[in-house]
Length: 125
Length: 262
Image (cartoon, rainbow over all chains, first blue to last red; front, side, top):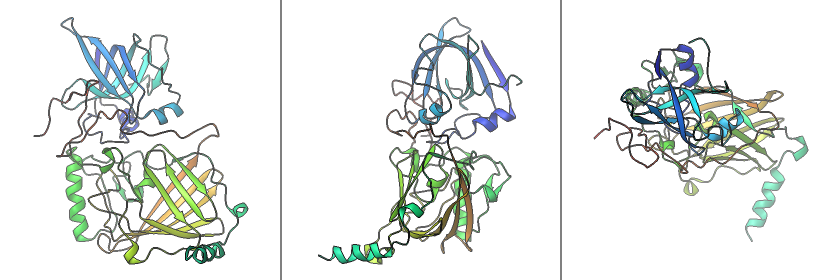
């Protein structure tokens, strides 16, 4: 499932310049995409964490996406842990897409099947 | 043999005892700064974000530096402003280090104060043992420069010179910078329990027409908070090209971007 949420002012405020180590110019911060995905790998590393996910596309083949988060140090202080995402987890994830349409994005929030949330997940969007 | 009398002189110059120093222990986070701008007071439009069209700061820039800033703003708007700290291992330098994300530690001793940024590598060493800045023949430009100062009650006052400046450092993601002639006077003190204030007066005969005053605040995090390693090269999947484009790599190190500048 893919859902383009559109322009969300408050999400833009939250996600802007979250990339401490490099410019976030490659992300379209005026757009938010929501996808239901399966976690392949969670890289708990500096300078950024990465959530590698797969998604079944309309052609019934699998696409692989790389979702970039902030650094693990600040995320840990906000409640994240090195194994917050496990391979095989099915989650709904929101991110700012790449401007050039490539399969990557800047993390905004994730919702697990049991309702747990990491990051930002306003109910009204 | 010469070291002994010099050290003796420094020791005599100490004006405070350890028990008279303020408690700046713990881990601190910046208060200002979610927009990638160094000086929020002169940022227009207010709450504007670095790199967005029409967003900039208004320090008292000389004509020369205004032209440089406009060129940087144009690159930032295109996503092509190379940030030195994107190259892992390059310090942000002073005074930018006071505006970094992640956390800070302030280690206070009578003879010296250290400002350590988790988002490193940055250690600002402020000597308060009475020594002056080095003589001209003993100076070279560095990222954090040379800082000396003294305690005025519970206020740490220090001056910083010899910063490497333009082309090696920037102040923020809008591309604002200083020249290597910049001098910064800083006052740091607690304004409330757990709230630290830094007042900066920046003078730069090349970049500025008048003193530029910038204020930053830091808030102390709960006792359980810790600082951690920031190993930027551990898994840097965002190299920057010579053209200033930040790339994104997949787990195998291949470029994900569909569009790469030639």
